[in-house]
Image (cartoon, rainbow, N blue to C red; front, top):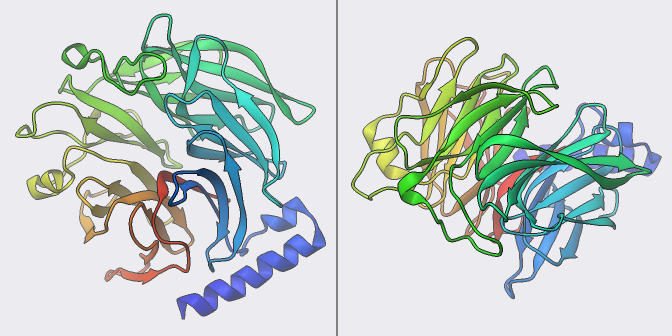
Length: 365
């Protein structure tokens, strides 16, 4: 049934593409296009797009490994952001995967794997490292000029080692997960584990700090974000402390409340093996999903009550994203899956997507 539905939706999408309109390409009811970074068995890097019926839209070879992906709100293009400490990000045409631009970081900067595009489609903000003062967090500010990105400036993230950046629902307020870890150029080696300064920052687009909050454990690196339509922020952490310590690997900031640990059972925290990779919120179903690849576990909870809905084994689970009826999850080693979350008993089905070698993030358009 799932495959038949996917094929039907895929046909709708192909029809839209035949008509040539980007608005039709993204019309409601069309099968989502899953964007992500993948490697092949020889270690070559690709920016890929697949429809959920398994049809490959494109697989574009790129020079550096990418991490997260963002799409332009009006134009048929997406930006594949370099994984730390990469210096090249790639702008691709979503209709055929054609490389439109290689965006190179400024001197003494490298990308941290994440970025956002403003709702007006004119500005891009990318988390970056100042390697003259390793770990000093910056948002590189880029402007679309004639459909090409041009560096326009930078603003502080008010923290160290920023990783993911997202928008609050107003589309104007930025949320930054400052991981708190210093790294030098061309390195992923942590320099300051005994003096980490992870923080969750809300800031205006001009760089004005609105709030800055921390978790109780100094060696708990705040890495990834999901933002609900009501302004609830959920973060995923990576704990850099001793293996026997318990860590707050999922945290939440509800509107008007403090940033606190999400209520996890001890066995759930232990199963994550001190590492989370990707977090997503399903607004209509009020669910939050989390991948924990080092523990080979995938979780889903009720966002409002904290009730566990799913704790499933999934080898090297990677990216997760919300679709109409649930979540799509990729795997670095195994099959990609769809979890139907409409009923109390969640249903799972494999997707006809290539198995393995996926990066820790996916993006659906």
